[in-house]
Amino acid sequence: MEKTGSGRTQGDLCGSPREEPEPEPLIEYLYQNIGRLQVELEWLQKNLVLPLELKQELIEPVNREISIVRQCEFLGLNRSSQRKLT
Image (cartoon, rainbow, N blue to C red):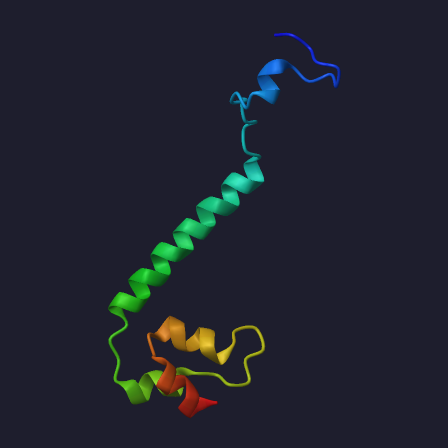
C-alpha cells in the first residue's frame, strides 16, 4: 500500500478493516464472569417464588453495597413496592 504524507497507508484512510488484537485474558475472564452472573441472576429470579410480604422482608435498607432499588430488582419487586420500602 502507498504511504501518504502523514505516514498512514492509503488503506487506513479508505477505512479498510484492520485486524483487531486478541482480547487480553483478564478482559475475557471478566466477560465470562459477567455472563455467568447474568444467567445465575435470571435463574434465581425465575425460581424465587415467595409471597410479596416475604420478599419485602428480605430487603435490607441499611445495606450500603446494594441499593434498595437494586435489591427490589433482584427480588422481582415492582416500583410501587420500592416506594413503600423507602
